[in-house]
Length: 176
Image 1 (cartoon, rainbow, N blue to C red):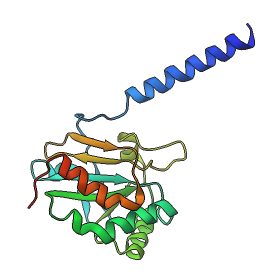
Image 2 (image 1 turned 180 degrees about the horizontal axis):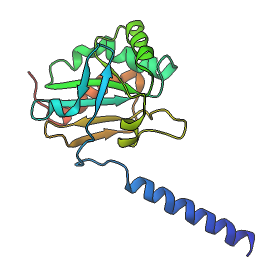
Image 3 (image 1 turned 30 degrees about the horizontal axis):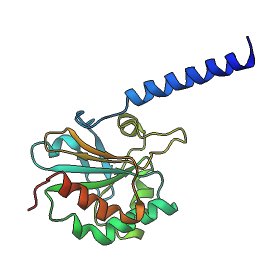
C-alpha cells in the first residue's frame, strides 16, 4: 500500500468513527437522561422530580475555579434575576467532587444549586464527558415533559445568564 492509501484509510476510519459518535449525541426531542445528583445546597435533585412541573436548564461546566467556569458562575450568580420569572429551575453541573463545588458556589456567591457528578455517569449519559475526563461546556434546556428542547454547545461564559433567559423566552417557557 502506498502512504496515500494508508492515510486515506485512516482518514475514512476517523471520519466514520466521528460520524458514529455524532449519531449517538443527544438531540433536540430526545428524552433527557434522568439524574439523581447531590447539590451544593445539601439537597439531592432528580430530573424526574420536575417532570410535569417546570422546565430545567442543566449547564455543564468543566472544572470549578478555572477561568471560564468562574466567569460563567459569576454571570449566573449576579444575573439570576433574569431567570427568576421563568417557570424553570436551573443548575450548573460538573464532575467535580461535591466539597469542591460547595467551596466554588460559596466563593462565587451562587444561590442556585451546583450539581456534582463525581462518578461521571450522568455526564457520560448526556454526552458531555470529554477525553480530558471533565464535562464539556454545554447547556441543555429540558421541557416539562422531560424532552430536550434545545442544546447550546457554544456557551459564552460571560453572558451565560442573559443567554439562558433569551433562550427560555425563545422556547416560550411560561413566566410566573
